Image (cartoon, rainbow, N blue to C red; front, side, top):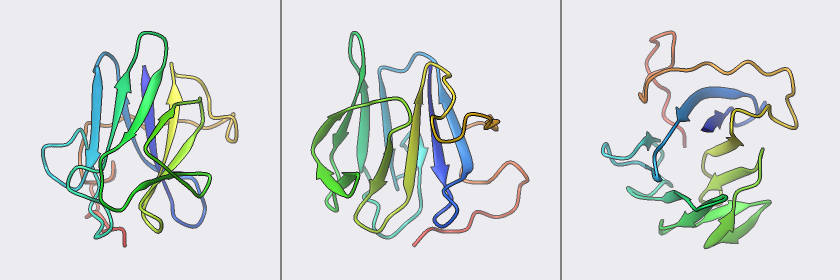
Length: 130
């Protein structure tokens, strides 16, 4: 299993969570046909893909504004448990957790599971990230 947490831009705490069991590719971007949809002007329609390899996951940038790990732009990167990626230099951050493992920075974190949606679990309208 792989879990993606959209992080709050200031507090770095999860504000939305997606869990995937068996997908070979997870697509992230602004377009409505992605697995994870993020509405931000700096996020490309098809921004990044996560590819399941035999023994690991790999991040592949396909967006015009780049994907960043530790403030370094990447094209391809092996996923480590707890890694945080930023979509574009100033865009939203996603934390990636592997096999249901707890976050290394938030060991007591409780994830909220919800269907892939653009609305938070409490049904308030989604705030668009800028």
